[in-house]
Image (cartoon, rainbow, N blue to C red; front, side):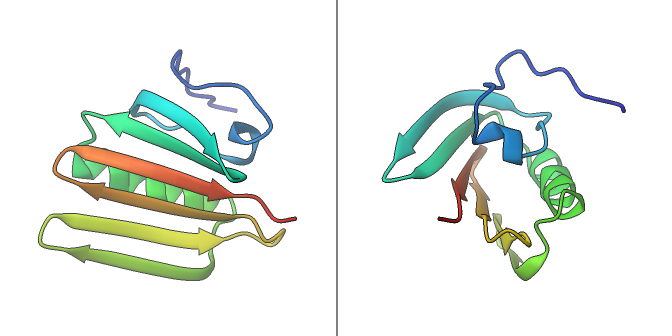
Length: 101
């Protein structure tokens, strides 16, 4: 496996459900059972590449994609019912993971 090394990427039960991004992690938080990651210096190309990683990792159910005027939003679920929403604009990006009950 060509596992990418990302020293900022936390190792926990939430990130275990996600592919490792080639993006700089600014902060993470867990709010009401939703795991949030904020990325710094998030260029659109890297964000789009990560959305492809998410899709390859099984987040392809009910997929929704917005890509217009500098705003990029990718949202999808996996077969287990976990859902992700990746939003990017103006050089910052956020990823929200909602784990199925």
